[in-house]
Image (cartoon, rainbow over all chains, first blue to last red; front, side):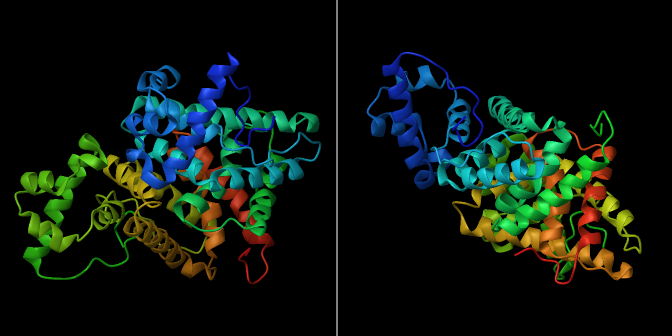
Length: 199
Length: 199
């Protein structure tokens, strides 16, 4: 559980294939903030990573799949939290990890590109929903020792203000802002009956 | 104050220029969801709106400026709330108006495009910050009768979950979800001292 953005299990496989995959992702991560999402063509990526375009298509049949992996497999920042008993501590550590993850330029660019393309590209839309689900499941795993599991609505209430501040306000997420988010979010959990979804 | 996304004052001017401007925006609003942001070229827009490209550049020197107007001047949905005494009522009505505004396909597409481009295009970044500021100012105007004015952080705590649900989870914002957002947000206002920013 060291991946910063809650990839639960990397696909296992042949070590040489894995090495190629990781190398291509590292090159893509470096290129993406420089050239932007539309500039990250398979032709450019193949040249810079010294692989064939066929190899790229074998690993990532669609650009959405590549962007998906760039979002979920950012560099290991060592910030992914441990499971814990205290909901406030887990939520605070998780939001700080999210902040660190989306501050990596390639992760940020890839996440925004997938989001913007999702309305016109079904692969991107599916990738985005899988990213949300992956994060949601990972967060509930961290909460397991506390005996609390949250609904998807409650999850959105937690992470929404942080990504809005970073992506829409284009502002800083301070520790004090994270504390304010977690404090108001805990009131929702305290008032909740079962089931806690608001549909 | 009938604009759904809180444009405070339309630029006044020559009525014929205004008519041209409104007609171009209406054509752009129709085209954008069909062709996507990269397909909405000035060449295509000039042809469909029957104006010259020079006219387009006079109104919108950058594409970011055009997308900005498409976000802030959606069609009048008649949902923009009235100022009021009751903070819960104002916040609830405002979030419903926001939901209606960003459900207009052209507004949604334009907002996502500006967001995704902002990291690589300073004009888009400025447009996005102006959109946030415009909404924030508009919301505080609605709150004036209540005697309460909120900070930018508090504003992000309010709108963040709604846009995250729509754009990132790609899910529905139900009335119950809005109620949950407002309920937890009010606890932040109740606990607040002055100043209420969390920097």
